[in-house]
Amino acid sequence: MKLLAIIFLPLSFLFAPFFQAENKNFNRQRTFDVQHYSVKLSFDQKRRSVFGEATITLKPLNTKLRSISLDATNIKFQRVRLASNGIELPFNTSKGQIRIDLDREYGEDESVDIELKYSAKPKKGIYFVKPKRKNGKVVRSEQIWTQGESEETRHWLPSFDFPDDKATTETHITVQNGFTVVGNGKLVSKKRNSDGTVTFHHKMPVPHSLYLTSFVVGKYERITDFYNGIPL
Image 1 (tube, rainbow, N blue to C red):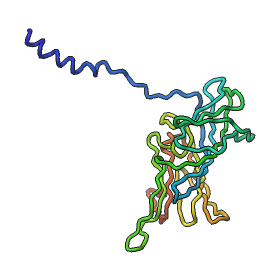
Image 2: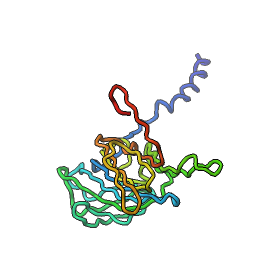
Image 3: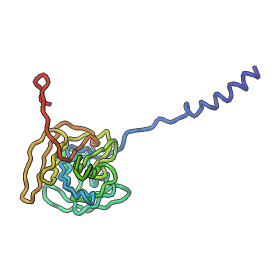
Image 4: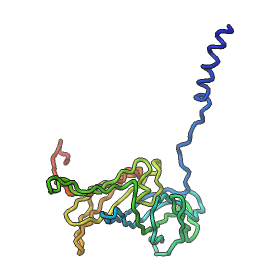
């Protein structure tokens, strides 16, 4: 029996941390629920910069919402205001977030539309790909594309960037003529602008986690096909 005690004591010590491990809470506390993101973007590809205007529609989760905090990593803000009436809202940035003071208290039966104008040079979330050349010819055009999983959209879009919050989205992405933008949902319009750029408007009406908000910019050929009457 003494021999058994010597053998089993180290084993019980070895497995003790597994039995004592605390259950982690993967939920994130919040005071509001984002309903919709509407985003306008343009780029300086040489400087790997993003210029954006985002309108965020949200609903309070309590009866006295007076301020909100959004994830915003290395984003510089030029303006924050209410989209409905243009009232400027005080804000400050710290530790990868922007805190916005609302003009009054809002209740659970109301919605708030906040408009933010900003710029960024993202180190994550958006990736700028240089053109690839072979024998002096471009064999792959320059590209811009996103990868937000699971919390990297905050590098180019001020947001509640956490997978359990789901919202609808739409993007208005402006690029140089000759480039194509592929994005979430349906292509609503393609508008040629007087300065030689083109704006692609995509709309996704199905609520989804923000890291799934994506787009790809490049020079592509369109190939179509059908399967059982479904256009591909």
